[in-house]
Image 1 (cartoon, helix red, strand yellow):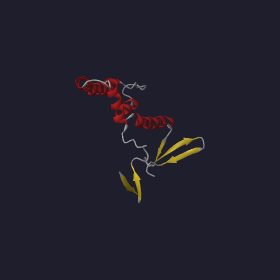
Image 2 (cartoon, rainbow, N blue to C red):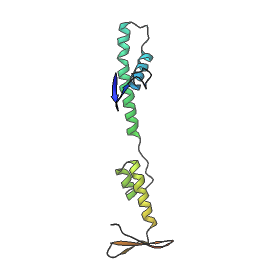
Image 3 (cartoon, rainbow, N blue to C red):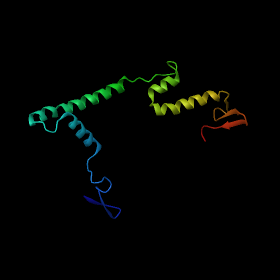
Image 4 (cartoon, rainbow, N blue to C red):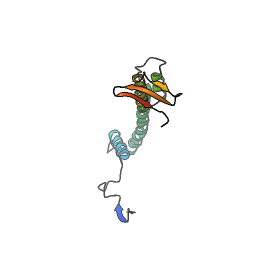
Length: 134
């Protein structure tokens, strides 16, 4: 079916080489071919046809069970801020928070100035004055 894209007529067949199926259909077709013989009778076909959805459900349940069985191993001591953040956040977000916590330990010599309006941090180039509000 042609349709308009930016004033030009485009066909859905142009990029798929006249193949309108998708991967899900191809996968289901392949599984049906594995279970059902081409020259089977109608009774045998229907009997084996009901095996495929059951098999697909079992495969899905197996994959879900594997995901629930995976438990991440924490390298931090129990009750530490690192361990608490890693249980609350996703793995991706935890990496950033743990990096910030690690950086905090590197600047332990931070001295508050002017009633917590700015901080003085010793550096190899001299003292840096940092303000959290700027």
